[in-house]
Amino acid sequence: MTPGTTRRLDLVGALTAGGRSSRFGTDKALARLEGRTLLEHVAASLEGCPVRLLIAPPGRYALRSWLPVSDTRPGEGPLGALEAALSAAEQHTGPGWVAFAGVDLPRLTPAYWALLAGARTPDARSVLCLDAAGRAQPLGALYHTSLRSHVTTLLDAGEGRLRLAARDVVTVPHEAVTRVSPHALHNVNTPADLATLEAGTGQ
Image (cartoon, rainbow, N blue to C red; front, side, top):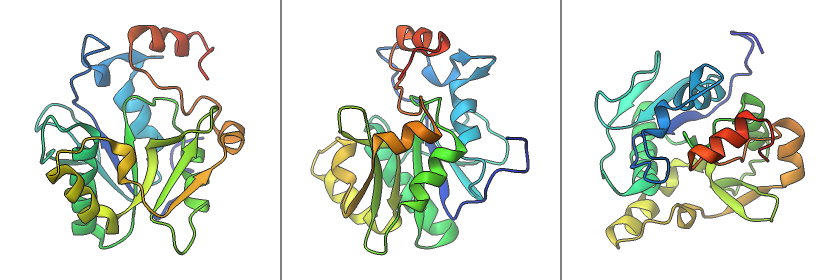
């Protein structure tokens, strides 16, 4: 899809980066795939979002047209980043939906996010895709800003699992994901994962 033709989405894009990358060995966000960093790949998937938030340590990364948002709970992982994203999104646009992604998923595409946006129902507050094993994936998902207080409660209780953030969940079948974005759920945790993706064999 050429620049300027991406479908506009009524979502706030939020990309979290700057974690420990302990299994990767170096800063995963800056690892390169096909000439671009993983950070840039995931950012491109969210270009249809009118407001885009980069949840990361101050000054560590730069993405044009992205608003920097400090992680309010450094070291708390993606659940802490989601809290910051939901809070910042509500401040910028009011109540609404956040497309929450990490650099772990460099094959996310605009079509993937459009699929999730189209799956929302009036009662939903989370939209998650199912992987090939039928497991709901909490990263690369939609969360409504009304979940912020729930996420804060989890964090205050010492909880760190992102999957517990989801409530009133709509799930998108794996088959639907693979039709529009075949490798979207290929998670890059190690250099070997990245090599598999480069070779075109990641699922």
